[in-house]
Length: 266
Image (cartoon, rainbow, N blue to C red; front, side):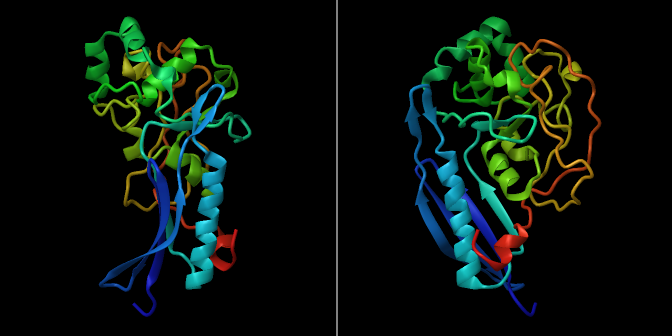
């Protein structure tokens, strides 16, 4: 290999975030920290939220630092956060509201409310993961119970790393491994079950396709196939069955950076 390949990884933890540059020469991987920043929630009158726009600014700053300090173009970008939290987009792809933080209290009592609607054993049978009130399932139920106006306009559900990846690439998709943290995924149905196959109202359709870590795939002809929320999205006790969705090819988990990031700072 004449020149090393450069990969930039963003890791957003509960208190801080960082950008790490990985350089692979064909035999050895070298890691160096490019940027580090604070990641803390913001308290608003309606609850605890991600400081998502500042984090987006930090991500762009990390891209600019990598481009300026290391010169060579990036072969790929990867981004991860913790699971369960999510953002919702409207029909134009705009963020409906600032994403809630998993430590927000709006999910208090939602596990018990879910058991009132669907038996505990049936939820575990369908999902197979630990019961925690911070899971996406109970965050969504809290929105349903409160009759959140966001549900009237939301058309796409994206987990937090998928939201940032959408802003980086324009591609809307729920990557498989992070989707399994939501407690809205049935591992026995491959890959993501449509509502009419799930058999339980709360387990309505996840995306018609998914990206599995490490796979490389072509960009699909339809760049926006994700989880619709209207007419039967991932809402506990979903109301109306959704029509079957045609499955498309799987997307890439780590997408190439935007062209602008190769040559200049965002």
